[in-house]
Length: 61
Image (cartoon, rainbow, N blue to C red):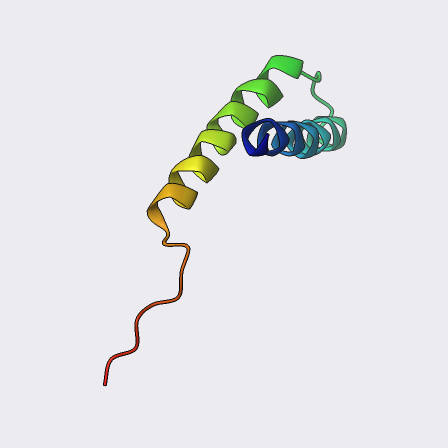
């Protein structure tokens, strides 16, 4: 479920940014660019969450 939620939120937010930026720059809105960037951002988030440890770092004395 976390994978679906991560992709959904990245898709919604990146599509929104894509639409606003294309409107401001007066260029045509391309839906598929938002989809491709959303997939890339989702994969990047999954990789980062796999690399970063979940627990606190052990204390050194």
